[in-house]
Length: 146
View: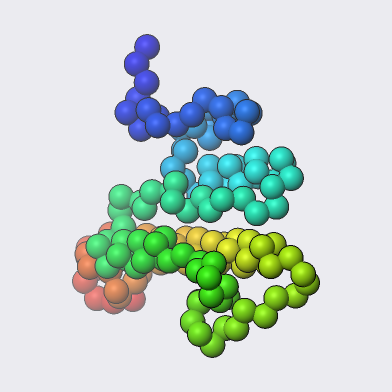
C-alpha cells in the first residue's frame, strides 16, 4: 500500500505518542497544530515551539490575503529586545521576576499565539467570500463588494 503524497512528511509518532489517523490526515491544519501543542503541554513543556510554520495556507485563499497570511506567519518574536506584540520600541521589556529566560519564553509564546490568531482571522475573512480586498471574484460571481 502506497502512502498518499500529502502524508509522506507526517510522522507516525510525535513526542513518543502515536499520531491518530484523523490528525495525520490533517497534519498541516490548525487542528493538528493544536494537537501537537497539547502533546507538548502534556509533557510539562509550558513553552512549546510555535506550530504556525507547520500549517499550510488554504488553497482557496486569494493572493492578497495569502500575502498577509504569510506576513503574520513570518513575523517572529525578537528575543534580544523582548518587545511585546506587535514588537515595536514602544513596548518596553520590563521583566517581572528574576528569571529573564522565562519572561522571554512567555513573551515568545504570547507572540506566537497572537500571530496564529491573525493568520486564522485572515483565512476566515478571505474564505467568507465577502472581503472587498480579495483579488478574485466572490464565489457567487457577484463583483460588487458586500
